[in-house]
Figure 1 (cartoon, rainbow, N blue to C red):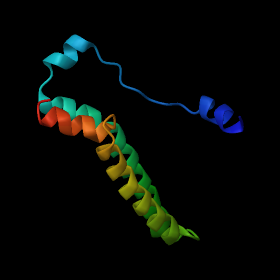
Figure 2: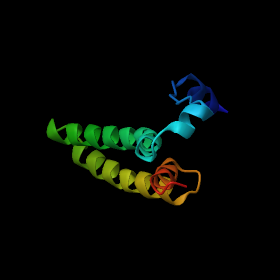
Figure 3: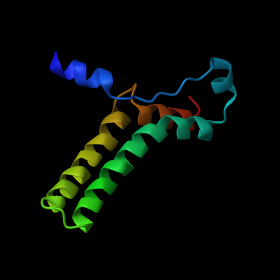
Length: 96
């Protein structure tokens, strides 16, 4: 219950597409659209860890290591899940 209250106040971004527009888009454009959100999240996660380490924040190295490990998981999971964004990007590149 408490987590729901917190999550309902965090801004979430989404992409709204029109079916006709998506159908006309080239495979590379579709793949980039599907992969953009996951990739941006992973890059920001790693960069915050790297920054914490670079400014010698206490625990910065640990945060960087955790960020890298979380990123590895964040890359592999969406690629394996059929409805994951990376799986959709791979399908778009294959023309499916």
